Image 1 (cartoon, rainbow, N blue to C red):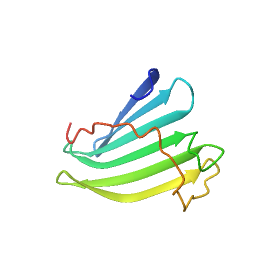
Image 2: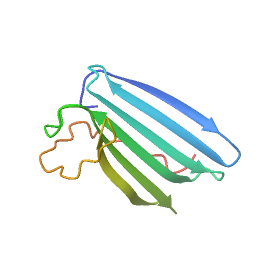
Image 3: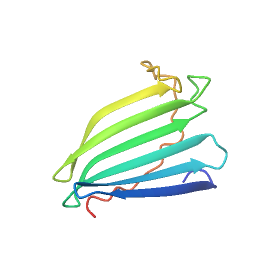
Image 4: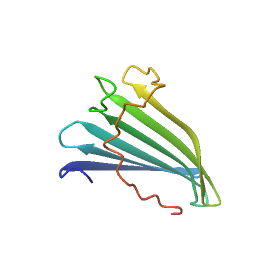
Length: 113
């Protein structure tokens, strides 16, 4: 992590059709939260991944912004399905030229369970 202090919570939900693993990592300062949700099929193969990053200090908006990315996986190949930047009120930010994204920390996905 880029910040020295953070907390992590992991939740796992299993059904016969799917396993969902959600990890929420929050900076101790409260300036950021990264949520990683991994979706696995009944064979234990990663089929989807959603990353939500909520943060202040973007330099282009005075309140919290959310960066939301959704990926699909087929035979281990990752494909970006959607990517958007939204305000805390759900308004999409189209022009992100002046924005900074200081909390894009690396995250290791598990391709199979």
